[in-house]
Image 1 (cartoon, each protein chain N blue to C red):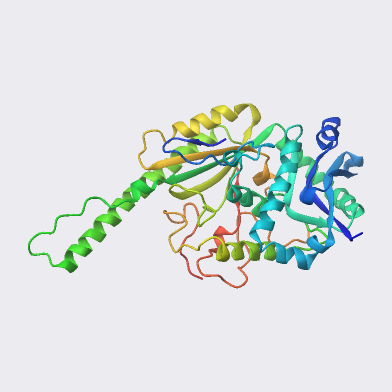
Image 2: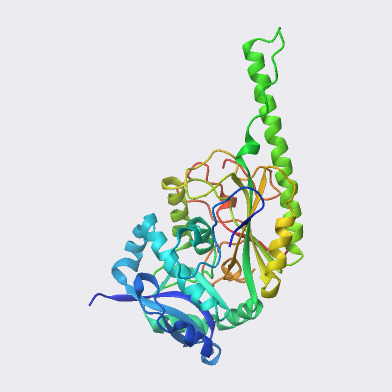
Length: 86
Length: 297
């Protein structure tokens, strides 16, 4: 369930069970946050290395998620470094 | 019949509730989910289902993962299994596309890692994950009324002045966002036992409105979920231009891996610290944002 303090955000996330209703459906991006970067990382037999997962993430960002030049976080290193070019 | 491999969803303790949850449960590609027992004298189980090697072998898998439609179908199926299990028991969700050659290999994994799984399951029992995202609303990013240009100001100068005013307005919004983030974190940590930070959401998949400025996950005792949610919402009350979105309860995805130890032989698990360099070095992809950062609150 999604709660918003202001504005009418589209409901996202939550305990969507079997209902395929769009507004009950978990936002894919929230799911991918958890399924690609989280979960127990085991080395399966089909070795999808972490580098591959990173490649997926990079590709997804390149292909699907527009790479924004804006800082991912408006404040500096307190949350994570930003804008630091390698 | 096509060659099959085994897709693993989660690790849990064996129980009668688990057997009930599994009844009729379908996973990726609508394959029936079953249990593989092992580890801790057979008390641990992995929920798995058979999938086609033609789709989940190393090469096809890598290709498929580039396909958002395919990725979404697998992600939702994976999540469906996790949700069905989580309704009844505590599970350790495995990462998307954890694939083994056969059940015996899964059993071997349970045997080798049994102690770590058991510890983590004990920690996560009766806890759920809540997602907390903070947004700066688009309206708040609009520039203030243009500063009237004085007579001697040329077009160049008034442009600069306007840009400066815009920047100040934006700085104000981010200052507010930052203090909102601190309030939210403070409220959240009164209830949470662990905290994880995801990268902020951007791009087409990020559903607004507004710009996402924090994307956190908290591990919260089951019975404190409602309090947690209302306190987090209260923390941003009255702050203009700031919106908080609480998602969940989730299975403890962001907390499944032990905080410090990771699977042996697997370099660079996605924890706080230094993730490996991005292959290819896509511009704008910041290394520090490629992993989830975890910490006790």
